Image 1 (cartoon, helix red, strand yellow):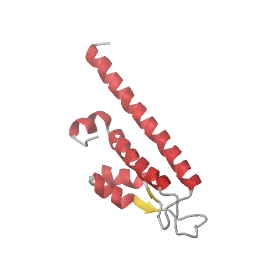
Image 2: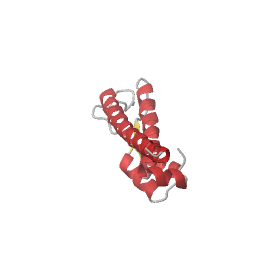
Image 3: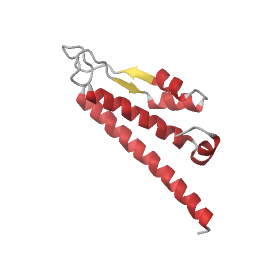
Image 4: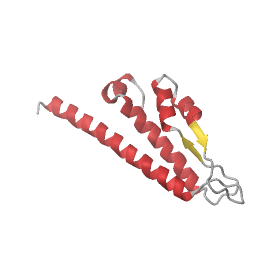
Length: 120
């Protein structure tokens, strides 16, 4: 989603939140895909920090970079990989619920605008 005046005005913070949640989903899936890669360091995006940075005027890349954190494993593996599947699955599920809720809000907003334009 672009962060132009139209999407910001119509969808407010939700357009930015949807974009950030999508990028966080990509990072989490990358962690899961690399669960067996020796030395791989699991990362995540601090969603609140990234959203605050974006709302403060930071570019998307800068907000994501500043909010990306390495995970600290509960039980470090012998090969240096810090991916813990239970943690990744929980983060994935939590992010998916947030993504779905944000998308539902945006859909509702589009439906409202569509009804207004039709005169319903």
